Structures are given as C-alpha cells and as structure tokens.
Image (tube, rainbow over all chains, first blue to last red; front, side):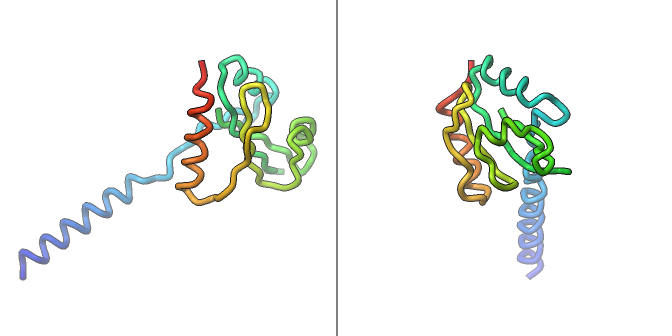
Length: 58
Length: 63
C-alpha cells in the first residue's frame, strides 16, 4: 500500500515537472519598435520566409 | 522570421496591411522572402500552428 502511494506520488511529480517545462516557448518578434519594411527587407536578404502577425496594440 | 506588425487600428503600417488585405486583427500571414503571400494561419491549436510553421520553414530554410 505504501509502495503504491510512493510510486503514484513519484509519477505525479514527474508529470508535473514535464508540464512545468512546457512554458509555451518564446518568440523573438522582429518589428516591435522597428521599421517593419526594414525587417522585411532583411528577411528577403537572408532568404527567410516571414510569419507576419498583424495586430493592434493601440 | 516572425514579424510583429502593429497596425494601431489603421494608424500604422497601412501600406503593409493593405498589401496583404488585412481586414481584422489578429491576422497571421506567411510570406516568402520576396514578400509574396504563401498562406495564412488556419487552425489555431498549438499542434496545427507548429506544423504550419515547420512546413513554411522547410520550404524557405534561409541562406
């Protein structure tokens, strides 16, 4: 009984640990406070595809 | 390359938003290095977003 409890607690702790590691990640957005056209020109120069997030913070 | 385009309700970056015919916020547009639109974000669940980003990155890995 005690061993089952310890095993269950260990399994739960491991699951919580892996869940905690998933912070959703961070995206280093370009364009914030920068000239968007200049950033797009840099992407073209680097041969990189762009993912443009159009929003309104105003 | 992830680019944040703040349109400030039509007060900023009008030329860029008009180029891609942005009609509402938020809108995510994928474009090739030349700026040609190659897709828009479809499903918004994490797995679908990640898959779409990976697909775009494979097509245009950069220099």
